Length: 187
Image (cartoon, rainbow, N blue to C red):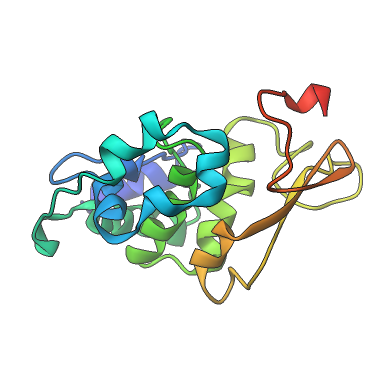
């Protein structure tokens, strides 16, 4: 409603819609289990056991497409971004690492451009946490942790999932060779 948008416009409040767990219909997470062969994702399986992946990914539950609601919630979030508010990713701890990418894809289903979805995944989250001086964008003096992808996520947001390399603390790693169980501090 217009009064809520107007109130939000004058606040410094960020919005984290958490589309993978959205209420009002089947979760956004279910949408991707229905559409993608998640159990075939080699990178995911390198870090997450089949015991965690298969029960959800291989035992698909179908829903009518018009039952999914995440695109409408993302559309409301788009109204906030259009008026200058921040919307950040809220992957909710769902399928490790992958749900974050699903959130970006769902934002674009609600009308975000790929660039706006990437900003929500990076700069908006940093601002929301009060850490924009250190993270969230590539600038001199900020931490140099980043990912390299195969493809162009500005043209096709799905390409953001194609992570080839990760830079942590200035060291570049092949995405399939990251140490299991290690923390960023130990890299």
